[in-house]
Amino acid sequence: LYSNCFLITYMFFVVFLQIGAERHARYLQRPEAVSRIVLPEKADNVPRIWAQAVLYGNPVLMIVLDIMFLAVFLMSRGEYGKALTICYSIVAVLLLMGCCSQYRAGTTVDD
Image (cartoon, rainbow, N blue to C red; front, top):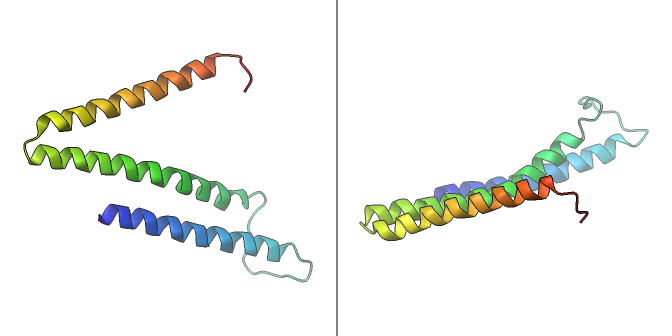
């Protein structure tokens, strides 16, 4: 519960920071704007890349953590069959994703 609350709050925090960084970048493009804090060249991409990584990575991380917590919870209740099924399914999905990405990287078919 606490990890989900943290990750969701972190995503909202990143959205607000992304909006602030974009507004600051637009403000610096005006000729009359003089700022004491000026970012170096090409540093305006850093907040955008960071926000993209957080907004796309956190939901996946949240789902994986919830599934792992479910497996641990089932093990603590003595339901080892269900817990092992969940662990096996996770490994199978990860292997399938890895095989698909390797196959796609090795082909020359255009999308």
